[in-house]
Length: 469
Image (cartoon, rainbow, N blue to C red; front, top):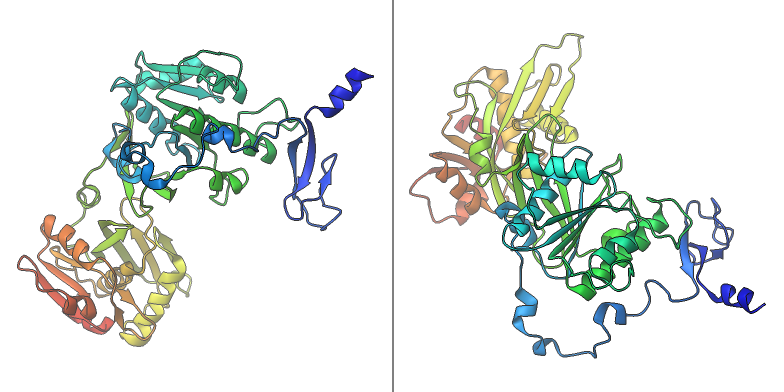
């Protein structure tokens, strides 16, 4: 009888509605209380609440004034050995930070992670890489291929989260008590690990959230930067509950076109730095190679004297990028024009075609139109509007744009050219690469003192920009 009572008081799993808080002993597709579908998530109830108790994060310390915290505890950073990645992180890894690294399958997440760990291990640090998707031999083979096989890089093939934190030196795991905490812990991926206290399969909402919470407590209590690799769904979101992104300190996304060697690492969330920085890499056989001067790489194969080719001074976050926008206008084969777009928003191209026809006297709506951003990058800012319109007009005329001219500006529905931010940074990048002339919004031109190294042509209408070109 006593054994039955003690079992009843121990932890048990329930399913709680994430909308109204209603609790059910088993999973249901629809919550009987609020009638919402798919909101019941498995949780642990009873015993010691796994996510309760701030003492697990603060080690039971009493509150202290922010001014009393030593500056070193606030500014200490651990370099990753990759300057482009350190740029995105804000200077390196922060002790105790929980980082989520996401991206499409095959984009290079695991490769970038191994190179990061090798950079830390190469400076005397000890790193632990726990993989739930590969064996130790497979991980070691990939590490040797990219030159990341080092004695201080420890590999572990494990999916039990308690075993992983135990090898990481946490007494909570209970499996490897007394182990020395590593300098950095990496888990690849969060969708493959599980805790035996939940009955659901690895990758379920309850398992992902609970395992991430335990790794978060490990990172905070041990002061070990912990990196979680996350899978991405078909719509581009990181698989698992949205609360996972709220739980972590940093969310990094690896982006890129499968047909292009270039990869962009972007911070969608960063509690320790800016989210306006990007890192550019090139995927090669030996791993991810840093591209410190992406504009020069993107323009290296630009054809000069070809109609439809225009260099646009774009910006991604705080980083200016010079990219080649290519436009092609051809006779329609089926009697009506079709649109093929790569690297920019197709709806934006349709809008610019209408503005060209109605405001600038260049009607190509009945012809086939092709727009491409060279290098496989995707541009979303409105400053590329003028470049797209100029590339299409250049192709339609059959006349090339001066190869030493760069353009930028937003195009409105009335055909006006609107000012864009970071004009000085865009011009500095263009001047560094040898461009001598720039077509830019008149408002931006009026705010500039003058540029002795470049001819600046301010325009307020699309027709004026085409005439200047």
